[in-house]
Length: 379
Image (cartoon, rainbow, N blue to C red; front, side):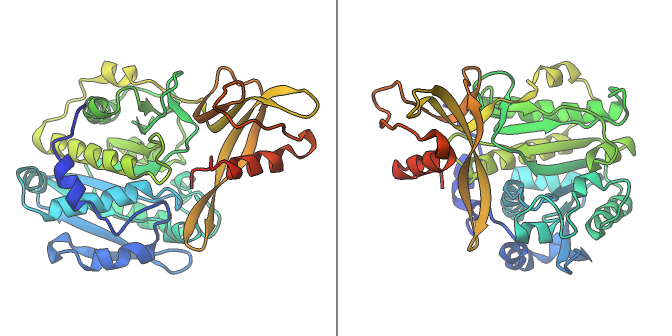
């Protein structure tokens, strides 16, 4: 099995104080304050609820890269990877020195601290910041746009998390990591900006395929100028969307976090050491497009007291309780799901499945009780 060259380093140097899905400003403030002065920590604005928003500026190179994470407050995996990246850049190595010599990085570790605190996609005004790029109605959106205009990046990395529903194409492979070069017009024209970001994505995909073959997806490139990536791409900056997805049996996204770290290192090293012309568009479009094919759990051949037999597709709702995210199951679909996939399948026609006759009039409650009784919930 392939082992990434940085795997040993990562095991002993990843930011171990950050774990799980609930990552807030409280968790990262002391880490920011402990960074060397060369990381140029700056208070760049405040959120709706007056929480501070910070940036870090690192390196002395001509190639400028703007990165931001947790634009959606409940998408925390890339924030963990950002702090792993900061740990890497703090240490002297050939790779870190090359990156910092040839690049200047501006990183916003947490753009939506209110959403992070409440564990919600939206900000405190219930606005999706990734649909506010044109209106700029929210203070967090203004902060990002101001940094963009002042920093004038050559590349943008837009760091997000994706739901467990996505597969990498129409196969039973979860989209552990997905990428997109956003469109900059309605025609989805393949412009030079898009070609350059495609080239970076292709290089990251080549590396990731060694660790997670067939688990990398490509997001749909439908144009929406209200999205930040589409706006920045249209303004002339090659932009890469990162999406941290579901690694098998990893609902805390710790394995995915490690892969996002490797992808960031790969992209930064490539930008630092290469003149990018945008010559790999064919390879980009060979990355399978994400499909909504997965459930968290499928109960196959479930039987009720009325002798009905059908499948039940179950999803988890992520619920914040006492500072921890709990995964609460609910029924998404009740039908035959032979063409769908799941991260866990319980087939009642198999002898190993605990037998159970479900009550059709209280199916939701009965299913949840069954899953809890037999320890089938991934908390």
